[in-house]
Amino acid sequence: MTETIVDPRTKYHSDGFPRDTGSQPGLVTETTPQPDHGEDSYQGARRLTGRRALITGGDSGIGRAVAIAYAREGADVAISHLPAEQGDADDTLEILRATGRTAVSLPGDITDEATSEKVVRDAFEALGGLDILVLNAGYQRSRNEQAAFSTAEFDRVMKTNLYAPFWMVRTALPLMPPGSCVIVTSSIQSASPSPELLDYAMTKAAQVAFVTALADEQGAAGIRVNAVAPGPIWTPLIPATDWPDKLPKFGQDTPLGRAGQPAELAGAYVYLASEDASYVSGAVLAVTGGKHL
Image (cartoon, rainbow, N blue to C red; front, top):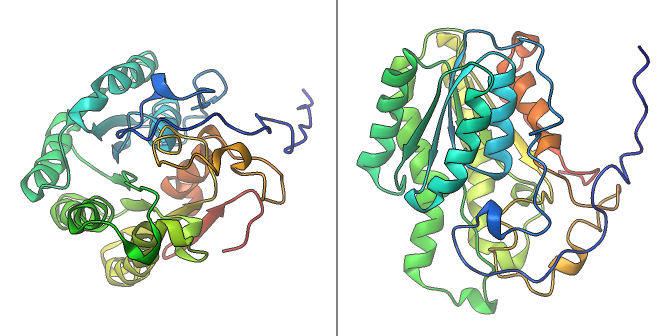
C-alpha cells in the first residue's frame, strides 16, 4: 500500500484563531476549533508493549496526545491533572481504555510538594511499576511590561514548570529500573523567549539545563532523559493565556505557515520512549514547524 503524501502546510487549520477566553485552566470544551489529539488518526504499532507511563497534564493538549499514542502502542498509562480538569481527563481515559490498556486518573495540584510525590507513588502502585515519566504539565500567562505581575503568579509558574518536575523526578528515580526514561516538555521559548512570556520562558530554559544535567547523571543507572521542544501548538492552554492580539496569527510565523496540533507531537514522545531511541539521551527534539531552537 502506498501512503498518500500530505502537504504539511495544509494538513491542519491554517487560519487565525478566535479570541481567547483568558480563563485557567484551559479546557477542551472551551477551545475553538478543538485540537486534534490523535483520537481518530493515531495508529499504534506495539512499540511500547508492557511499558508503564505517568504523564503529567495528560487530560488535554500535548499530554492527551501522548497518552493516546502510548496506549495505542501498548503501554499502561496514568495521567495527572488538576481536579478542575476531571471532565477532560474522563474523556481521555475513555479513549485509553478502549485500547484494552490500564488507564488511571490522578487528580491533584502538583504545585504542592506532597501532591507531586503522591502522584508518582500512586502511579507506581496503580500500574504495577513505572518506567516512563513524561513531565508535561505547564502553566503560562501573558505578562505586562516591566515584569508587572505578582509574586504569587511567578510562584505558580515556577512551581508548576520547575518545582513539580524536580519533586517528581526525585520521587520516581528510585522506582524506575534500567531502561526507563524521563521526557520533559520544554518549548521553543527556551531558546527564543517572548517578552510577554518572561517567567514561562525562564522555566523552559531551566528545563533544558535540567535535562542535560540529569541525563549526564542518570546514564550510569541506565535511565535516559530527553526533552521535546514544541513550537506554537494549538492546545487549550493557548486560548487561556490571555493573548487576544496574538491568536488571529498564532503559528503563522513558522516556515510551515500554521500552528501545530497535539497529534503532531505524539510521534516524538513515542520515539524517545521506545527502543528506537536507546542511544538517545540529553537531547532536545524540536517540533516547531521549522522554527529554529
